[in-house]
Image 1: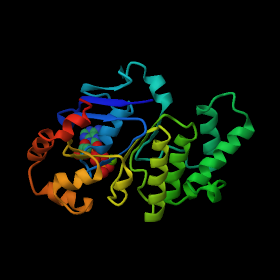
Image 2: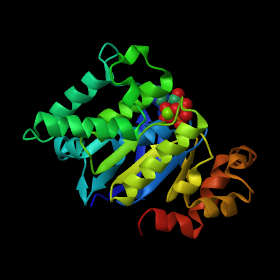
Image 3: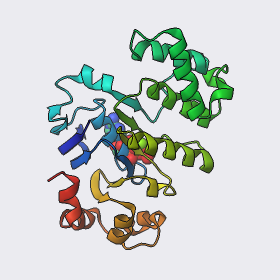
Image 4: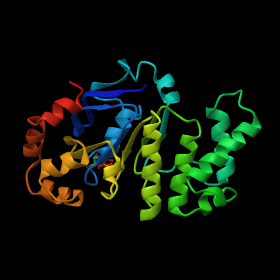
Length: 263
Ligand SMILES: Nc1ncnc2c1ncn2[C@@H]1O[C@H](COP(=O)(O)OP(=O)(O)OP(=O)(O)O)[C@@H](O)[C@H]1O
Ligand SMILES: [Mg+2]
């Protein structure tokens, strides 16, 4: 059971404050979607959750322990797919999966079991046909799925993905979000950022960030009610119509904020 708690997390770079006072809880069994305009701080939030950025103030804890206290153990329990590619372009998908499996999986796993696991992941991500192709010869969407596969191989308790659906066609995107929702159902803690608003209904929780502030955390119906819009796609336009402080205040004075912070 891995519950991640962000308590009043701020992250600054020089004078620029990229994330302010984020208090959120991510529970096992939940798929959380982080949304917000480009440059709003989604990747910054993800980086604070993955020990890529150390919060300037506040803390990220798992089971009450600061993730920076035992960073190695935390990274082992974590599958993190950053926004940019992580796998070597010259490798074939099969090689990338095999090396990742050897590095991350139980050393006692024999070749046959690893091979079976690789085939399962490839099939889950519709990559079976591409296994012998080199990464640099894949399409953007296939490459993205290759990066995801490398992280899913070790079956981590916590799965954090920054724009996993970028470059995917709508059908493949839907399949991917379904897969992530099913991993959450199996008890994993799954957090993703996403630009498309189409599949938010599959997320248990949606977090919205704008200008480095958390301005919403709740379900899809709560999102529509909070911003008084008929469809999530209209939330961005509504958010732009008022200054950010008023959205922060509206969120903080709602029951949603206390619940999101785990109070
Ligand atoms: N290392 C850095 N130094 C200074 N500013 C940064 C740094 N990294 C990001 N930023 C700025 O912080 C803000 C938030 O960036 P972030 O990458 O978190 O946005 P995002 O919501 O993930 O955007 P996108 O949807 O385009 O991926 C942006 O204004 C960005 O220019
Ligand atoms: Mg980003």
